[in-house]
Image (cartoon, rainbow, N blue to C red; front, side):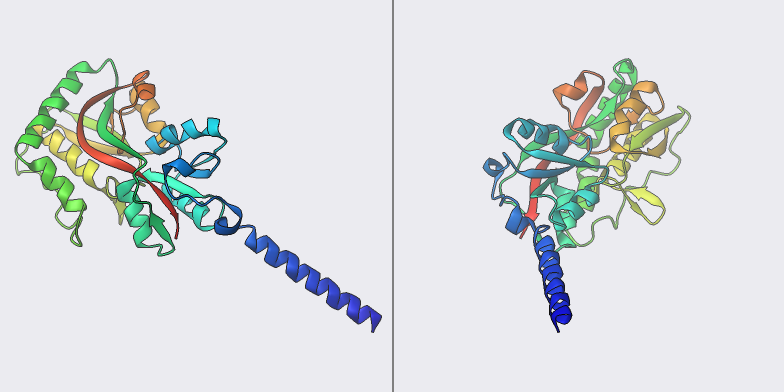
Length: 267
């Protein structure tokens, strides 16, 4: 009987420990409640490596925050759901997609940072930069760029009417190699075996203006700038924000859209 009671007590102790461990993974009981930007100091913040969210969140490390950097935004979201993080900082449009399919998550009303997206290009490639800026100006003026963006944002038909190049477009000016990271819906993502999104359609429209053929190279986000610097790619297009830090090593075209960095938390 004593042996039975000892075994029973050990089982209860093991179960208690297990339940306690499970509770330790719940950010609502062991983490910090994030209600806005003012709550970020000292928090466990998840970001996608090398993104604008990563750059701006890094400022909070001096305030005692822990920044967990993931290769994909989806990995950071999983970390939040598992209780390893208090929040995730990411672009608003991908954030909406994550929250849409995870009803235990929500986006805070207060934005984290406003930003402008541009195409990154080598500092030495000024001629191509000027040509792209001219093309972007024309696409803004004739409404093509607004149409491309509207196709992917705002309603249930998003992505259903992608940009189509006019017939007989001249491609005699060679290829434009675009480095991207197809993990950033709706800007660039995979639909079946094809990379699609706002940035892809915008790049296609630019190539139509330049008389070039678009070639897309998918890679890790933090490899894009080095690919452009080394000449492996002509441009980098992946929802990239112009920052002082990036301008030290790379140049940017004129902006083609604005975006907002937001904070995702558990409900």
